[in-house]
Image 1 (cartoon, rainbow, N blue to C red):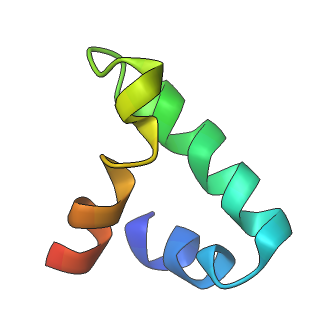
Image 2: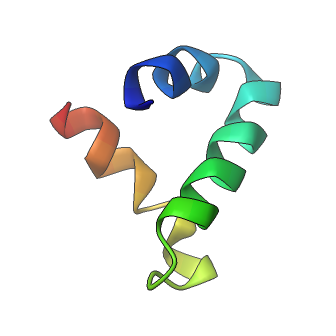
Amino acid sequence: MVVMTWSMTRDESGRSALKATWTSVVVPVPRASDEDVPVPILQAS
């Protein structure tokens, strides 16, 4: 899932989809950190 979403991150449109995906997956994380959360997670991969 992370790999497939990673490719979408390259596209601006995919970025919105990526955010929506992480919002559903990462529930305990506040919306404000939504942008900061997916970045370190993807970089770790």
